[in-house]
Structure formats: structure tokens, C-alpha cells
Amino acid sequence: MTFALFDSHAHLDAGEFEADRDAVLAAARAAGVREILIPAIEAAAWEPLHALCESEAGLYPAYGLHPLYLPRHRGEDLQALREWLRGHPATAVGECGLDFHDDSLDRERQLHFLREQLRIAREFDLPLVLHARGAFEQVILELEKFDGALRGVVHSFSGSGEQAKRLWEMGFLLGVGGPVTYDRARRLRKIVMEMPLQFLLLETDAPDQPDVTHRGQRNEPARLTEVLRCVAELRGRPQEEIARATTANARKLFSLEINLHS
Image 1 (spheres, one colour):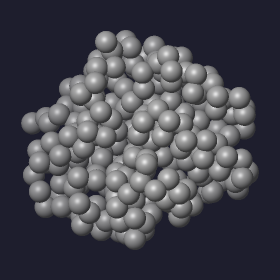
Image 2 (image 1 turned 120 degrees about the horizontal axis):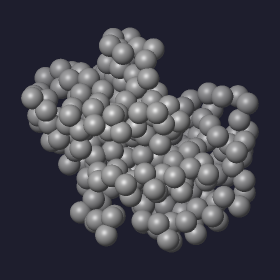
Image 3 (image 1 turned 135 degrees about the horizontal axis):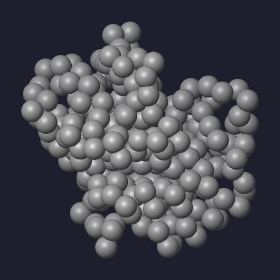
């Protein structure tokens, strides 16, 4: 039995899918994944991402500048993002954020790009798709400066229970994917078990972060069913209930009553 699922974070535009993207999409549809949010990583990705999302119903773009690709970003990309958003309907701003796990990336420059993208999200009244690796506390502190004027999702959440609570008290959702299926992810699994369901989104982060049954393989949106199965088991609730709630959460956050293809 399949349920209508929303993959809230998948890089379907990545080169890993170049050879078989249509088959990957067909497999996702067959698994019940009807809608996919695709976040950009750099300015050069915006145009092809726009074309991809225009070509297929149920694919939604987020445009932004990912911290891991900091060496590729130029200062003028921030103004270019504003100009791009004026002419291209978007579901969100992102993927943006901070990555303090990689010591080669200048932290002050990361903060500059994040702060400007937070301002852009506020200017355009768009939700954020946030990356926070080794930097949850700093990301939360930056969000708190906006005093409730922002909304969005922190994808691949791996922070503490206290950080999770601070995020959803600001109205931010938590994206949960393949890592939750690993038994060793005890802290994350406890948060997923106990958190308010209205702040939970499911994701794959394809082609990265596969679930435990596909360890070492290319991830893809069809595998969202494994995340759903795990979350339902952790919470002791039917899969259909979790699917319905998380899909509704995504559609509400991303304002999908608006037709981006009109």
C-alpha cells in the first residue's frame, strides 16, 4: 500500500541522476512520492533547476547558496538571487546555512552569506531550507535575531532536544531522513518519537544520506518509504497517519495552494 508522500529535500538536479532521472522519478511516483522540494546549491544551478521543475508536475524549486560550496560563491550572487527571485516563482530560499564541520570553509564568510539569505527570505516572504552541520547553535542564534519574522525547515536535523524545541517554538520544522533509520542515532530517534508531529517533515537528501538498508548506495526519493516506516514505528502510529501529517506540513510550509506553474 502506498501513501501520498512529500520528499522535502532531494537534490534531483544533481549529476548523479543525469543518466536516469526519468526512471528515478518514475520509481518515486510508484512508491507514492508525489511531490519533491529540490534545493539549489549555487547560482549556476538556478537555471537548470528552474527548467527541471517546469518540466514535471510536483517538483518545486528552492534557490540559494549552500555553505559547502562557499568557494564557488561570489559576493554578487546575493544580489543575483534577489533578481532571480523577482522573475522566477520559488517555493523557498535555500539551501543555505552553516557548515562548521568542514574547517576549510571560512566561518565569517559563511555567516555573511547566511545572514543575507535570511534577509532575502524575509524580503520575499519565503520559507527557508537550512543546512546546519556542526553549527546548530549558531544557526538558531541567527534565526532568533529576526524575532519570529522567518519560517522554514532545518533539514537533516541532528541537534539536541533543547535545540529542536527552540526551533519549533520559532515555527521552524525539522527535516528527518535516512539517519533516523540507524539504531546508533539514539538522540535523533528519541526526538522523533517525542516531538510534536506538526513540526516534522520527511526527506531523503538524495543522492546522499541513504537509509540503513541501502547503506553505501546512491539515495533516491523512492527510499522515502523507508524513512516513513521507521518514523511510524518509532512513534507507534500507522504509516498512513505519518504520511498524511508530514505531507500536510510540507504543503502548508511551502504554500502549495499557489500554483507555481501558472
